[in-house]
Every structure is written in structure tokens, then in C-alpha cells.
Image 1: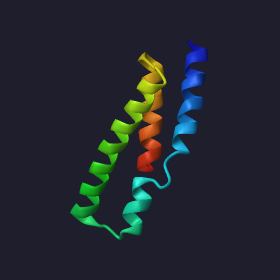
Image 2: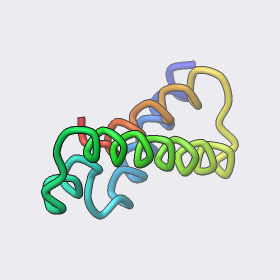
Image 3: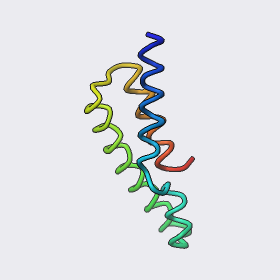
Image 4: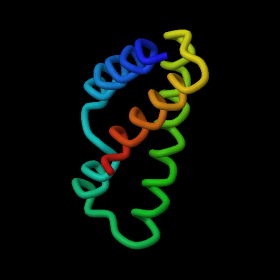
Length: 80
């Protein structure tokens, strides 16, 4: 179990490097505020979740390892 979690964390770190800019950075670059920023961040988080779920599936992660990987991956992508 511990080994699986360590592998998941290592994969999460490598996946986080794949994202060029976080959603928050992109929103700031676009000078979004209010409802536009909220909408952008919501869409960006949904896209990140889909991408991270696919990466977890490609790596054949399941259970706690998948949950840990996906959570960290999405957090890194969103930037928060």
C-alpha cells in the first residue's frame, strides 16, 4: 500500500510538470474578473479533471492511488 502511494505521488509530480500554466495564472493573464473568471476557472477545472482521470487510467491506477493522483493533478492544474 505504501509503495503504491509513493508511486502515485511520483506520477502526480511528473503530471504536474505537463501543465504549462495553471488556470489561475491563465485567468490573470487574460485579466478576467467576476463571473467571467468564475466561468473560466470552472471550465478549466472540469477540463483538468478529465485530463487527470485519463492520465490515471493510462497509468492503470485504482483506489487510493487514483484518488491521490487525480486530486494532486487537478490541484496543480488549477493552481490552488
